[in-house]
Image 1 (cartoon, one colour):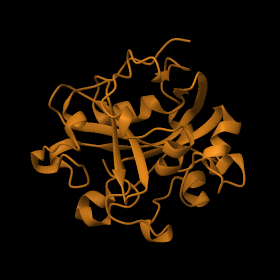
Image 2 (cartoon, helix red, strand yellow):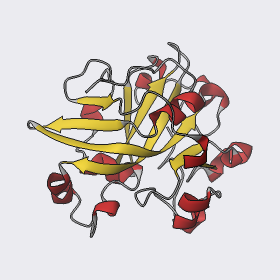
Image 3 (tube, one colour):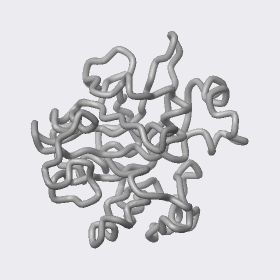
Length: 222
């Protein structure tokens, strides 16, 4: 299977290109994988919801500044990891948060890591859930998705999904970001049962309220 290698574009373009591609993490020789069905774009230093807002540089967000093709994995609340795909030129500080997958490989192993999940659609329906299901943690921060043997994205389609198949809404859990909280930078596959948040939003493409899921600051934003 050919790897997805196109990480040089801006985060909005990259976010839409990632929908329908397959995220893979090989753990102890087993592939844990699923098609990407929900993402959020973070626009770097101008974006109040981004970890790099205002040009902030820390040990935590160093991978966001490395340019397209690297993984940025951060830990939040002392319990959740979230994985982002860094995109754009070196120093742009832009990334795409992978919010949900449709699991396809290693499902039994995912259930073993996500014992609270009652059904397959609860395995990867959120950034913390998918990181737990695929055993992605800070040890994978900074890996090169273009060449790493364990963590990478496979190209299932050459062209972006048709516009009619893609919903768009405000991002989840970034109310602290003021006007940026209303920017429609969340993209998802319409009607897919693995999409996180309210099912109405997944079906109709309406903005999802962070209050409806009890989300809090920084749990979702890179």
